[in-house]
Image (cartoon, rainbow, N blue to C red; front, side, top):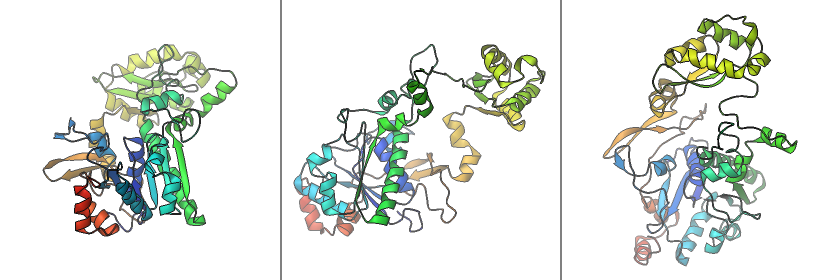
Length: 399
């Protein structure tokens, strides 16, 4: 399952994460070669390991998205003997990752200090809504709330409309930050030999993305919601074309790009009303209307190609089908076909990074069945005999 030449080969993760943000973190690390062992139980599986009629099969698309390359074992963490086994697993791991509310793992006996007794130099990642400390630390949350708490919702949407909280990729953003922080902690441990507890709040990840707006707010200025506009560029937006449901994203960043757009559109390049950026911004509404009227008669893909040839930042707003079939992404391995017994092949998102010394990154195995790797984990890593495992299963320690 794991490649010896992958960047994180030799790193093992005891994965207690649930839902999307935490599992996406460990999924990224697993794509880079870490051995990730996901801990669940039949009575309390990950909330996203649930059937859903997508891709022609009754399995969970959301769970598949963050579970490739992982191993799976069952442990009933309500039982003291299961906690002891979890600690034994941590003892042979480099990282313990969790994404419960603060205090949950401590009450189970699996908090940072308890795990340090099993592995003195353990790196522990705790990814939560609002962090492990502070007055809001007990608050629950999920992706749209992170965007709302962090100010991203207020910065999204149109000036005459409500904030747009519901479509930020906050789970993935939080998971990406968590993966980076985990790698930093592992690097520091290599230098110092010391344990580290990484405390990451998804809410604060969102706040970290609004730096310029926060500076304005500190000066008493409330930034307006910009919609698809830009403070320094015009035209700048998403425009309908003659092709049904085919939208063109356009950004004119300087005077040269404006003249190039005018050439493609057949307009005078030296129009005095739009000669400079400040003039275009001052006439933004009229200019948007002019661009919209022109593009409404254009084929989306052809006009995007024509503008790109002239150096204008323009592209069709792609659908998921466009991305799945894109030859460039296919050639680079960013989109790959995966298959499993009794299931049709389907497109999946590969690892976005490329490494000159190895090609062994990305999806190597599909979503694990619950408990499918217990022969390896309990048998080989923890050296439990078949009789011991049978006894633990009979008493619902492993279940």
